Length: 494
Image (cartoon, rainbow, N blue to C red):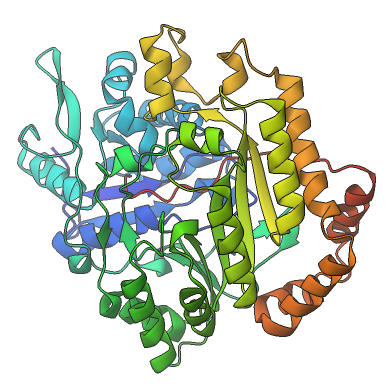
């Protein structure tokens, strides 16, 4: 039973796992959970962003022990699961009376395995945790079992109770995340040591979920393929708040900000009408990127858009179930560029159906379309995805494979080997850079600098940055892609 102190029912500590990242984004999900707890209960809530602070496991546990919380909650992705679980094991030793709660994508898809193997984890929250966490705290306060709480998995009477995952249906009813809970961290966004944001930086969610079925992505399964939007008015009300708080840059973390173009336009119209002068970054699908929409978004300050292109080969795209084709991607890139937006595209190499000719088509596509930035990765095999389910069905997985991230070359023995795939990544980056070493590329650069405030700021602020000179030099002699670090966790589980 939690102890009362100075009118506080329960002290809750929420944290990201220990680690390091180059993309210092605030843990929006934890801030949503913390704000909802404080709105509905009289608990004390502390948030630690160990990931973006670069805290070691030892330092994080020391901070936890100093706070003496009744409940410790961590989120995790597949990339950060082992760091999270090791930290929680040490936290339980330091705080034996505290209840341990784990959430996030990986915990959602591996809840029974985690509870069966790690006895120090008391509860898992599957899916979105705002309501589930409040209800769990209600049950803990009253000494009752949370077996009736949607989203909660736990051990009871020698068996595992594994309730369905939790989703928030009315997003407008949630309180805005309280960003002052983490005001001590200098958040921002950079690529290979090149800052891309300047001034006060935050993230914002205007919708949740994804209705698509991309085979490499767990987002759809995490949201049961239910896309849920906030109203345009509610979104812009939060934007007015962060603007008044001095924020200058914001990444919209929706899986697909342009899913409903009419709603996207409504948000943009309100931003313009209320004179919210900020720079925004967002992600969209290439089949929802008309020139008219891109122009409206650009006018509202959305200066950077990220497209998941993944491949320029239709057979590979069909394998990923993207329901797009290379020409749609080419048109989307052209529309966004024409509107004056910076365009970043992602590509994946290593699909089991991929041939060398297919990879070469992607290289040629990257070079000819000249997106302003690219992200190229070897195909991941993540728990919660269709690819992972296929590996389970054909018996390819080892006993402990569910605990960490895997690349496709570990399982697809008839495909490209690790060295070949890593070589493809380097070659893709080199083709991208070579696409700019032309008259058309230089004209493209001058055009975007004349139209886009973010592009001008990036260039001017990085004129003397040695990382820029390194990037150019690499482009001339053969690109060395950046070492991958885990990305910030943006799910709404603890």
